[in-house]
Length: 286
Image (cartoon, rainbow, N blue to C red):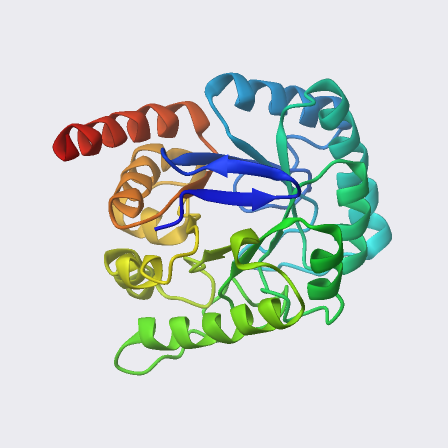
């Protein structure tokens, strides 16, 4: 299993689970759209998440919400994310910043502003230049399984699988890993995300978490973003903002099955739960 993740000249230890705190600087994200619309609000949120125990801050300027997501222009996305990344990098120089984008131009500008990770929910499918930009800048990359484009990747439009959805997810992810390696991105910089809720019905997402060990066996850092997802709502009821406890449960379950990085909205609760789970694991190995 990997012990570190290399992200633009920095080694992130995977000896304990890492928490990636979500900061959506969009007006229309499914859970917190519009809450951090100004640079000041987003930077204040970054400080809060760092104090709560976030190891990574993931800044996103284009929503992939399940219903009605629309692609935004590169200019609009840049205006949303780049000033926020610049301010966070200046105010919190030790913070590890990730940019959540499918556009190579945004990735390149964000890295120049201080980002160390590119989190591409299309795993380089939607922009042919993205792999080359990531290779050249030395960033850590998150390759997430998805199908389709911005408008439908988080819907059920392409959630068509055979008898074993995980087989297809793994096959499609392997193809994206091959693209990254062929572009010159070192294995130590690649993390994989199975894409819960992206082109997956609730049962598919549950099965992916249940057998996450199959993906973890590849030896890459594993990122899981279950926070407030629709499959949790279908199990527990409630709107996205009311899915805290289910989200924490999913994060712990994913960690127990091999996840290294948990991408979440609610950092404090997840950090505490993962610390307890990690301590129990360590005591069992002693």
